[in-house]
Image 1 (cartoon, rainbow, N blue to C red):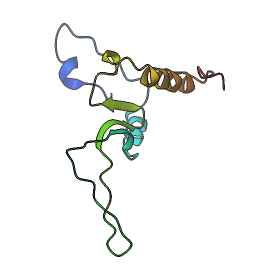
Image 2 (spheres, helix red, strand yellow; image 1 turned 90 degrees about the vertical axis):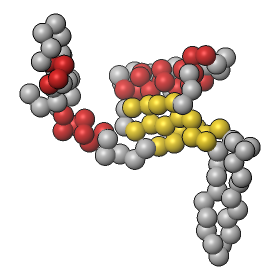
Image 3 (tube, rainbow, N blue to C red; image 1 turned 90 degrees about the horizontal axis):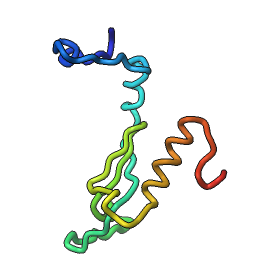
Image 4 (tube, rainbow, N blue to C red; image 1 turned 180 degrees about the vertical axis):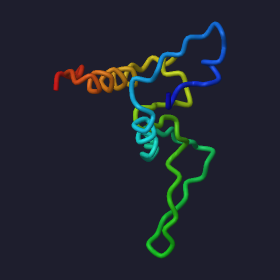
Length: 106
């Protein structure tokens, strides 16, 4: 079966569930660009200037959250912060994927 974890499946005491989505559809998710969702300003990193003659991208801080398709990653532990916004966002993503209303009621 395409997409099965062959190494795991070869172990005697392991049961590997087949993927719910065909492997070629999973591959399409990873053809999308990585989207930067959040940055943290880094005062130790100098800000680059940008002018019309020499367009150099500004350094807008360290990347701390990204998304590619349905994969989300952070460089910190959101559950250890006192800010619930990332959890609300994630739950809304789940509800949207399930075709349900978002937490905000829209």
